[in-house]
Length: 590
Image (cartoon, rainbow, N blue to C red; front, top):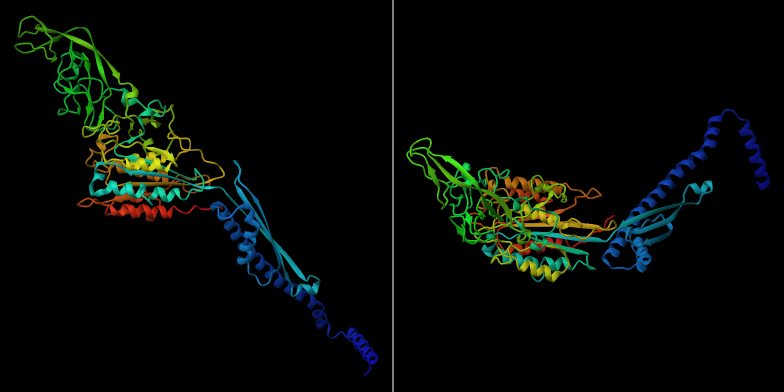
């Protein structure tokens, strides 16, 4: 058959097919088949393109994070970004379908108000298998990724037990080696700093109190209430109340105490836990009578050391003779019972109701020592602010820090002349040699109050706070870390009825206050909703018999893996090394 004949045959056959009405369903299906196949094919091609784009997005995100990490750690410079971006992306993106891949990168360096920023865009296409029948031989797709980060900086506060028990089992020496020794925590953390200020460390030695430094006596964040007041019945002091007068005197006879009188305080009698001293300065000798005319400090009534609160009363009452009063006596004779070495004038008939004694009375004015004589100790803040990190305000005295003249075992622990001085707090610093010197100067002294160490560790991290921590830049990510180490259970704090220096009162009230502080700190969030502080706690348990596990320390840690129970002093070094290793990653913030 010739081609012309074949063409005529096809025409004839088509005309017959068109006139034939018996096969109209087949005709309809044939007409619809092409768009159906086109739609199915388009779905397949679209799925291929979407899969290629999803893979591209994942690769681009990872590339952006790795670039920001490299820049933050200083392993690349800004000029390396395009080459490094291409290398990372090509290694991560392995789609077989994608063709014509292109990657563009834009980097904006951080300023004082904005963070560093990397923007990545990528594009590609797939060769279609079905849509090319409809005139679309390729499908294009693109995606982008952005990462913003600041400099990641680290601020670490070390709250370190400096109590007397740290002298046993070589614990203090082990602690000093772990923190300030060669390869210790300070060396580990200082190695992370690419520039001054990348890493800061503060040191907070604690016992019952902390030492913020005597040079701070003019600061407006100090509470001088206890310092300036004479012995009074303090709130929440239970059976350890400081009451006046006491000893051989009744309250009614307080006005008769003057020069030459017997000391109205006796530490072995009633609620009084202090006696009299010869003068207003701390460390004055104990006396049994009030200095009289001709003696030094004549007429001054100085209460001295309070063995219940382990603190020194800073001042004396000055006495002024005011008048003569009549005291009625009962019995067969009248004896002037004011204890003074002064004569009394008695009139009337002995044994009668008219028999009276006339005695001198005295007006008393409390004169506190000058604030400049304070040695630097502060006690727990007034509740409830002992259990939070609220900033002090002069309009609310309960937010201020009580100045305290701590004295225990005949030693004023914050005094520069003390043989075993409680070392002062070192605010955040990157002077590594000074930090090491401060740690190596620590000496075991006093009783245990972990809560005050923790409270001041937090204060040391508060920007522009009482300890002058540097401001925090909005474009910077900060890792704020607290490491709290103690070798014993809490035994005393500001409130004498909570503990006597050897043990706590029933119900563990000191632990209860600390537990509340820990809870408040762990629930404190930053602007991004993340925990503000990471807390590590360490219990050094070398006692025999061993102390129980400290529940308050265990629960204070940010997570179970951040609590360490040590049974020998040698473990202190390895534990701090482990914590230092955990802190040695500067993390990139997405």
